[in-house]
Image (cartoon, rainbow, N blue to C red):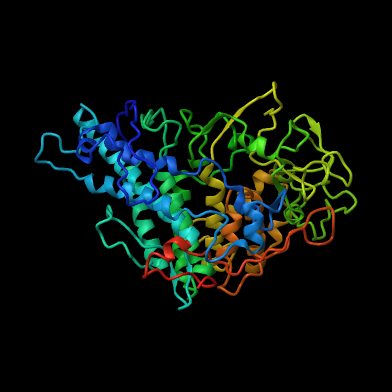
Length: 573
């Protein structure tokens, strides 16, 4: 079902409480299940409250636990977890096992009741609208949303807890497609990784069947008022999530048999998504993260497929990450020298490769570099948030000048709004939303899958070659006809290296690096990449040493001690 007349505004009633256990009764104390099933707002609220479990911001904790960044002190969860604090009994990064299952269980409750009964005057489980046609349109629309949201939370479980166990098999999470109660036998084993992928993909396909591909006021498919400040799931979001899921399944860490067909499926899913939305250039960065184009009443940003709830009139990222001199900023996330070095020259050549047009000058290391370096990372000499940054040794913003000063010599800029002011009496706020699924990632997902499926950067078996898709990403970064390097990369291994580095730069601080390093590992003993030492500008010695025991995350200890059938990932037995 791809179109519907309209959706009128609904005042949602919050009916789900935050429970310590996802199987405890989660309807509120004043409304019985029977009452909820009769009331439209309450009935739909069971589904729509799961949107509140979506990320409201990008969790920089994971980024600061990679070679991309550190936090400005060693007592943070990111620093402790990366330096050996992640154990079988303790996860400083936090566990989402319970909240994911809470959301899945609520969605299962909803789906079990979303059955049409043509023998009744009102065939839907509740009357969504007085108009019979619109009533059915509501039914199918929310049915599609429910399938997508279940897929979303299932993928979160797979990303965070999927891994290979000591028996050499890849496992995911215990699949649950029924509404569970405490009276049931809940000691369920983990399903295989492939079974979990199949389940997620099936839900994405169902979501795509019932949801509009994109939202548009002109087509009458704008779903106004159903979720305050939240973007609805769409058919395009379902296709993008499906492509991401297949990419993870094909990746070495979760594909111990090296099944080539998994790369083929990932490439096919990526092509399906690109064909659906159109193989177009990426919007400029300023438009991509424009605060007035967050798909909340203004669906003019086709590069964003799905996002978290909009946070309005806030200074969240800025208060946390501005340099201390910019209104007492927290200086929390400090990009690493490793990441700075990963940015190529302005003509696309790697910093360490000989470039005829823009050779790297160690005495002037930021001249003629990839323009994204200026957009993503604050460095000494730049003007930002009303001050001129000085992070040189002894500089006004350098290490040691303030308890919140940078440890690496760099401050975060990406996702921050330079026009925000956090000084008392002069506060200027902004709005933001966590971008959860978007075109840049989709392009990079497809390029990797197509390269691995075909073995060639120029094979267009799946509609597009890995090279021409990667060119789109680099074109936005470097400008038209500025990339002099990519066309020279011919071998598969070399192209994969460029692609991985491009993914690191393009998606930095958007929640991908931590998981990319893990899915690229070749097994439990392959910890070299995730334990890459982190450097700053103040010393030739590593700033932090990573000490991860396994590329796979441990199953929450609280779950392991209360069940008999869960097997843990390798490294955490």
